[in-house]
Length: 484
Image 1 (cartoon, helix red, strand yellow):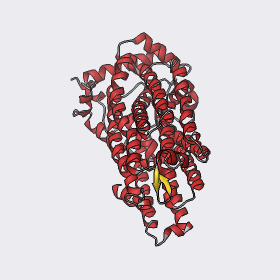
Image 2 (cartoon, helix red, strand yellow):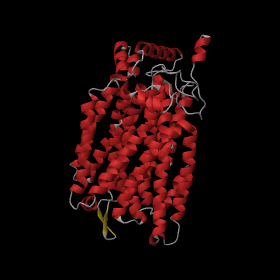
Image 3 (tube, helix red, strand yellow):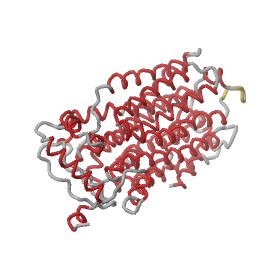
């Protein structure tokens, strides 16, 4: 290999293979940065105001992530809905509950399905493109809602949730890939972190719907929240037909004229799309010469293994921080001793604080940097979890409202900190760290492995907190604090 080519070789500890500086007019080339430096090339105002088309399509594709969040919170909230407990549960201590095995069985289908969805979507993305893969996922999403809405037994509901997980895994691997490929470098960090925002917005919508319907005394208390999910596939299928294909995918397929057309749709005014296309083709050529590869095996070779390890590690931290407690907030607050109506309201506040935290993460990441935000967030969350566990050890805490409200406030603070730091940054790091040629494979594997760990957490949490099983309640904070 010639000396100039060696100088072009990417450093896996810094960033992905250099991409064109642009869909932005006259922007400077991205400078190489250390791991603590903010990974951005322009001011906050410039990229967000100069690339409306890229932003619009990034947000549109994130609707799939919103649906994933809505479904997760809806299903979790149903377990604390009286009408659902009565129709699908059994009597325990003069009240109806859904047994822990069934709760785990249904909720576990989400990460289980996500694993298979994340593994399978890579094939569709590589063979048919990001746009077609998105439309396939959107169409399948209408199917899982059908099963859930017409379910008359927990078995059918379980099947629907398994399909929901499959779709969720497809979206969680597909959307970061698409967003990172249609956005210029200076915008990429904002838009990939907005994927976590979309998930939290979905959580907020799901909790809000459940809070508004849980007091209905008949079957519409749970059927209405499930039916409202049909809005999302309708929007995605209708709008997805007009979405631009990823120019990076088109370049790798040798469809250069189509790639330029896609660039013209996405680029800011004044951009020389022919020049951008030349830079993209050159980047693709360099990766071929450096044998970056484009298979799943390639992400574990000597050149890429460090990138893959980082992508996996940030996902592990996100799961072990207590992320999967979010699906059980209504039920958890109720077990902690809050009245049922207040438990649902606290769940809405829980996710609303998450939305605020995510919005604040954008300016913070520009000042602090990815690594400091991630590590700092992990440290703060560990402390909060230990305090939650300690409060649960207070004698007769069930009769002390101050302790119960203190626990609830700490969990809300935890979710705010998570979405300020760990949540958005982990997605951004995973999207940015890989070489462009294996971005699909790296993100898909990271999402699949994270789903497997999420599967373990999903099985474990109901058995930890349910009164007819472990009965840990708030002591679950010790577990997550120790994991971090």
